[in-house]
Amino acid sequence: SQTIHQWPATLVQPVGSPLSLECTVEGTSNPNLYWYRQAAGRGLQLLFYSVGIGQISSEVPQNLSASRPQDRQFILSSKKLLLSDSGFYLCAWTPDPEIRPNYGYTFGSGTRLTVV
Amino acid sequence: AQTVTQSQPEMSVQEAETVTLSCTYDTSESDYYLFWYKQPPSRQMILVIRQEAYKQQNATENRFSVNFQKAAKSFSLKISDSQLGDAAMYFCAYRGGIDSGAGSYQLTFGKGTKLSVIP
Image (cartoon, rainbow over all chains, first blue to last red):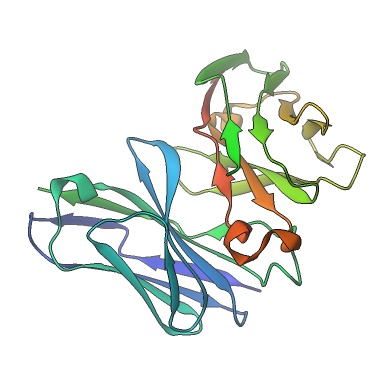
C-alpha cells in the first residue's frame, strides 16, 4: 500500500533562518506531488507541484522554493523565512492522473511552521 | 480558471440528525472530478467521497452522500446520522479531466465549512 510521510510535524524558526520540509511517498512510482499552505486554519493554497523528477511548477511567487531530487521525494525550502511564512504546510500525492484521474489526493500529516 | 465556493463558513447539527453542506463550482470543462475532504482538529486531510462528472448517479459512502447537479454546478454533501466524530472542517474540491492539460490536475479547494456536532 502507498504511504506518505511528511516531517517535521512542528517547527519554530526565527525570521531570516532557512527552511527545509521534506515529503516522501512509498509504494508507488512517478507520483504527482504537491505542496499546499493553509493559513489561519482555513483554505488551502497550492504552492508547488511536480509531475516528475526535477520538474517543478510554482503557483505563487514568494520566497519559497521546491525541489524533487528523487522520484518520491519532494522538498520545500526557503533561504530566509519571513513572518508571513507561518502556517500549516501539507504535502500531497496522486497517481498519474492520466491513468487514475478520479483518485484524488492523499495528504501527509502536515507541518505546523511558526516563524518568530 | 476554476473556482469552488462554499457559502457556509460554519454549520452545526444535532447528534444523530442530518446536515447538508453546500458547494458550487465554476468551470467550462465537461470532464472533471469533485471531492469532499474532511479535516478534523488533527488537521489530517481525509478523503470523504468523490464524484465523476460523467456519472449521473450520486456517490454514496456509508453515512455520506452527495447531491450532484451538473447543470447547476452544485455538489452538496449530506451527512446522515451525524456523530461527534464528524465535527471537522469540510472542504469541497474540483479537479479537471485529462483533456484539461497537466496543470489542471491540481485540486482547487473551497474555503471550507466548519461543522460542529451538538451532543
